[in-house]
Image (cartoon, rainbow, N blue to C red):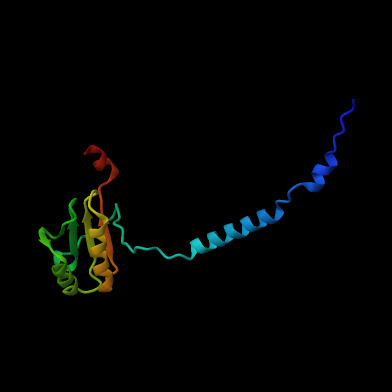
Length: 138
């Protein structure tokens, strides 16, 4: 009894993966190039940790806070959407806007303030947060 193995038929009938690999490289190249041309969704000015310049007076910046329930505050007074629009319109478009947002605040409240700022062509933002050491202590 003799076993007849035909290894040559496997080489001839095998699946050629070269075109598949070429398509994968083309897709990879496309997504890498597309990702480099996407502009950031949010323009921000980040605070520096060292050598800070003195802060301007409160007349030269807008400070909004959003609590865990989504209520919007200007300085320490609660405001609604119409007051938000009026406050934004009363200030120059180059005035920085500072956000203090609770970590449990609904994102919709933050987007409401951000959309109003963008509609009035305000593009200078600072989003405050806690350093990791202070957040771990809580």
